[in-house]
Image (cartoon, rainbow, N blue to C red; front, side, top):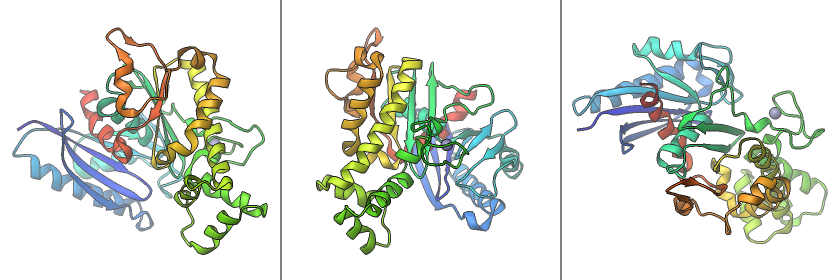
Length: 339
Ligand code: ZN
């Protein structure tokens, strides 16, 4: 039996733990809710118990090669401190890596969740055939990660790739980071609901207004469903998502000239509602993209066909392939890259 690693995707809502063979095959996945309200100690204990159970279950079959954990927020990669984490209240400025290692009695690799997702897509997803890519994870917030030469680009302290805080509107909506008009305020699930409510408040959106008043769980998905049914007000919200992403991706294309930009996270399932505006904006704002764009939009399953023997020559902008598992698989890969 092959050796394996343990990957953990610790989110503000879900805590998922997987045993993964070193070739990337999933052995087992455990999904738990993250009981944030019970505090950091409780969540870490529950996570460590699940890690121990999985490890002992597969220990007879192969060697445990390491444990990788993806967490939302800004991590200091040298010290293992979580500096900021809006989705894990009470966790900021704490030595998360040391607390976990103390309980497990084993080293762990701690990584930002979007960086882990970038690695997951590189390892097993849409980026299998390229060495360099950037990923946008659109969820409650907007995360980002960069892979260069097959490895996460950490920057000086491990905080690189915060695409959610690229400025889209200089004097736009205030952001939790202290700035204004950040991408996160126009392309996250939270932003979609806010923008829909803004349209409703203008008094000219009958379908959106009806959905918001009748559905206690009025969400980005509800807005999406209206958009694909042809509701012009809902479509307008997603055009704003596409325009904002197009601006941010154009900035990255202009600076980095990478072969691949991936859009992942829950909101990426609304791809068809925002992609046309995204590409329109991207082409307009990046002459590098215009010069290197594929003739037709790239389906994530067909992305590898554009990478020839001599390497990539087209700029591929596409959806993630692994969905919400990208971060989990990427976390499992972290110990393999360290060794
Ligand atoms: Zn911001």
